[in-house]
Amino acid sequence: MTPKIAGIAVAAAIAFAVGCAGSGGVSGLPPINSGGSTPTPVPTGKVALNDLGAGTYLGFEGGLYPNGANNPPPAQDTAGMSHAAAVRPLDASGNPSASGKIVLLSIGMSNTTDEWCGGGDAAPCVASTFTALAQSGGLNKALVIADGALGGQAAPSWLNPFSPPAPCLSPQVDGYCTNYDRVANVVLPPLGVTEKQVQVIWLKEADENPTISLPSSSADAYTLEANLGHIVRAAKQRYPDLRMIFLSSRTYGGYATTSLNPEPYAYESAFAVKWLIQAQINQMQNGTVDPIAGDLNYNNGTAPWLGWAAYLWANGTTARSDGLIWCNGQAGPPCNGEQDYQSDGTHPLNPVGTAKVGDQLLNFFKTSPYTASWFL
Image (cartoon, rainbow, N blue to C red; front, top):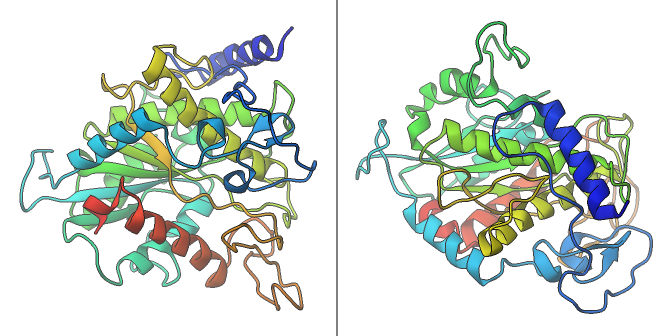
């Protein structure tokens, strides 16, 4: 069985297990070196995807986008600009209004809410988080930043967009059958906004306690890709005016003291994001639905436009090309005692760890051509 066929077989099993409506399921193994150039050999150690470029990790090409690139290809770029231009203030019913709002919502797990607002429903957000940093000034007055993420809500808990008939088919969350119900009833009302004003999402997710790494055709990276595909379709169903989803993968997991999401899974989660976005790019180019990621058509209302937000992984104290490192209290350079993680080595610690992510996200939303027009 070839790796491609093996990946599709795994996809079918995952799609059956998820049991979620839609054409989703999971994508065959992404092509290695799809750009046609000779891959650059790299050590077996991990290199940040934005630095890996056309190099490979266990045979899988780097870069955030196809062909080792860190920017979308022309067609995805054009579509992204078009979707960005369509983000505009809406009233509570989703109609264009000069006095309306643009909701930027986070979806995800504990790390997501820790970094976005501070890990709880209480306002205001923790000062070192993205939301607090963003609200310090310069934002579009119509923009409302909402934290829909919640601790313990890994990728499988975001698959169902609507409450099924009783009993719930997904875990109860704060008394609500789905996370989307919780967001609608707990998160958005205090901010004075509705689901019909949600137009942009930051999505950062993972699957708990992964056990199979790449290059296995059963690797957890494929399971995550499948789940992300279901989530972006569920979000589009729940939020009819959703235009864009920006994704990030995990930060460095080499300091983890639990099995929740250590290395190499934290690193490999970026391949799930890369393959999901690549699946949309390929589908819009040639019409072929990826068997793992599922249908991601943004022209018929199935999915929003997808792109990377800030890429957050760096190999511990080995600096990325932009200088990003992750520290865990090491004495001497380059950390000099800096503590970025909580005691589990997985969740970011206030104020330094959360601020690192917050700064990366704020720089992205302020400078990306797909966000600056409605963010600032």
